[in-house]
Image 1 (cartoon, one colour):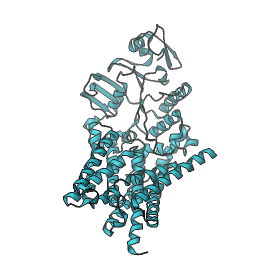
Image 2: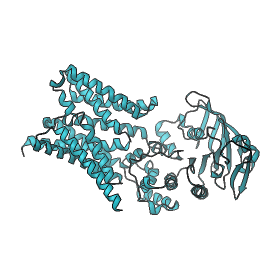
Image 3: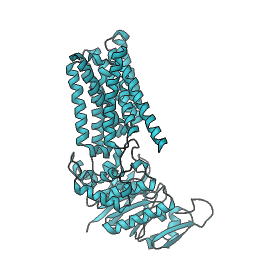
Image 4: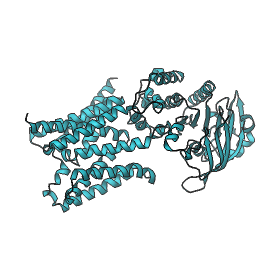
Length: 265
Length: 271
């Protein structure tokens, strides 16, 4: 295996694990649509950055952070349900992204890779960023496990016990935005959703324990990304689409396994 | 001794409309087992949420455990909330979050320890004790989501008592349970209150949800206190008929109260 291939595989495994952790948090917040909203806000930011000649990664994080800010504190203050605001922001982000892609030259634009992703273009600095974000998520989840458990179980209960519940939720959403941003170019804005939601949902099918489900979500997402990369290399398919297929198959297998276990009991 | 809860002419408007609480003044001595009773929309949950510091009064002052929550900075407010155990009306929890019963009870200890540190052996022992006290030991490792409604309420109560609060605010703790479960939970609350002597404030619209040994009753209608005092003097047929707007006959046995409608039509026939 040469260094180029090593980079692909490391990118798939590390990026996948980060998406799995982010997906677990977003599903636990009962806001799966927030994942797609953050992904598309990052996409819109990256496309606008590309158009303006500014780093797409920086602009993608700006987009995700802006969406996280609007979906967290602003939604709370305006008393708009986060799910409603996610839907509005999602359509706005998608509109801005497609407008930007159109202005950048449509299907011939290099910015199209942001839409579909290209794991094979991941360079060492981007890989380092992916690794740093995934590692930070794993460390934060391990250190603040009891606080995260409390807040995800019920923000109202956690607040009433004396925890800074809103601050913890906003921090989780912001970290998810970061994880989505660093994986945007590799997986693509449209494909990222499957890597966020499918492995985390599959993990919940396989276990009823919080810590195990969190670890499983990271592992299944890493496995889905690596499996998707393997499938792409084997069949010469687009990596992003292959990852979607594998992560969907992982969820289907987990759900079928749970149904079989339920019938055997 | 400072009162546990003190409202001084508190008016609170929800969404700018008519007052949910209208110049309410009340004082609860520390160690009381108090109940706020009133029909739907009387302002009972609003009163509880004002006591918890969740809602800011338009006028008047709420002092709970000697503090005005609205005047505290966030650190002091967090420390103050640790002294108060709360069961919201709809103890909402995310079904996608897989916690065991023990983990739910441990939430009561999370804010006591250092941020980012594991629960101490003492904290775990306190949770184990309350799991046992509420008869949940055998269910401790079960998924919270798999419990019945009554068992989930008990787990929330165990969480609240594991927090070792000085004041406990319970919003309709026995609501939506079947009759035996309502009765068992109501008696359990009274037993645990006798053991801990924490101040307990229960909000309910069901007379039979008042625990035996209730020391203080506040009758609330349209955001105003209609009557307050000892159960024997406040829970009379005449007062409750006025409160619920239909003729009621009140019965008492062993410190528990129930009422039946004696007029024709209207209401659900009991309180």
